[in-house]
Length: 370
Image (cartoon, rainbow, N blue to C red):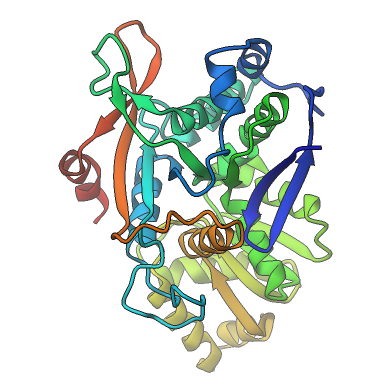
């Protein structure tokens, strides 16, 4: 039986064995069925995905701001010794020699708009289809120089690992990517944020977990669903605190909501790829020392080992451990490189992938959130 490893945390992997096409455990989208029924083209692309070992790129897929922030973090992170993986900085980027493909899904972002209107099968299928098409773009060895070109003639690296940044696509889409690989025999590794964060929290001993999430993520139920799949024996409470001008107010809004559960709190998961972790840590320290009745109640609620997790840190650590465990490192002597790509509309009205220069990305996206 072939082993299809779908990894969403370095310490845990899901092995799915298949030699022949097998029925999906739940209905998949028509796009996956069409690809699986084909014997050339996209079918071959999916079937050969993930079989090049350490040769290939690490694809980051999702909404532009999240992808760019994760790419920058992974490009520059130096938290470990590159020889023995000890938690010691060695002045060498942890992903030295790797190529990151930042696939900015401009055509479908923001994904929350799929939830702005009445939820229906058609809108969710569109989100699921975008997840599959982005995987195909990552696995392909060509892309468009410009969306107005007649054909994809620009060469690019095929991706060996796919890291989805969207919690919504994790809930509505990754199943279809998994199914496509099962039906075609592909073996690409996948990482997704909710599973990675929950695995991380469970591994660190958290029993009662709060998730600070936007409304659409809370509405999707991705965290309760993944926690149930993981066999969690505690609780996961997903909260969307009232927006405020400062972290102090927002954090206390969240703690006030959680306090109504009458449960202790072991870990707080953030769904933000650019959180103000220093301010959060400072506020938690103030709560620990405060003598006000409200803060004393919050302090009693927080466990002595309370900790905070964010997707950038957890996904980066999971990716590193995955590459090390599966011997997927490129082993090139060079600094990590990031290549940017955008989804765009072709002259024929189809969604295609075109290359974007770092200068364009800097002016089009980074200036808005830096």
